[in-house]
Length: 163
Image (cartoon, rainbow, N blue to C red; front, side, top):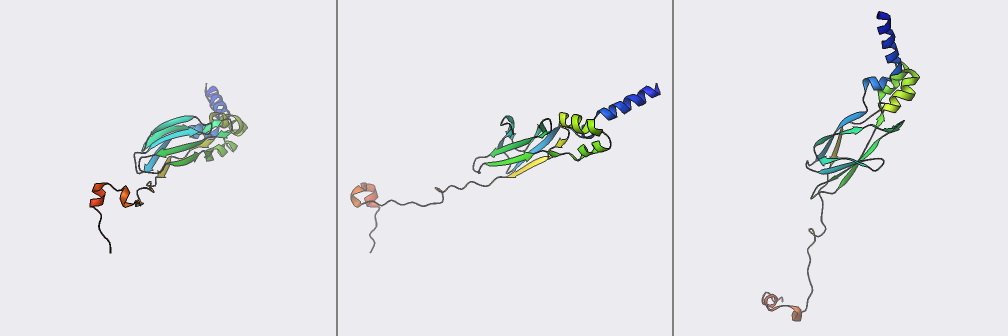
């Protein structure tokens, strides 16, 4: 009985990848903006919209887009009175993936971790600062040149003589 348990434990350890044991393939990512209350949409590198919401928010994103393919997300933020901003969030190789050299072997390194996506990780947060929108119309004063014949009676009554 003890031999069976030891054999099953050894087989399980050899058949799994190090990142698959220690890490995960789905990550909770906090999406924050300054100021809060920005609408956001997240698209993956295939161009599919995968999440949307209002900041601050926590979303769950996959770290992989396929076998040996890390994922990259485009986060677009919009808020009235502020310029829209786009931010890219990319996965990176998880340090535990290299633990396969000691624990998971070639099976973990070449099959398990790349197939499960556990060889990649994502940052825990995306913080984006929005810039106030400036309107060129609000900052400009305008004037109109007209001849006296084009003015209404009310506009003529407000005229002042300049010496």
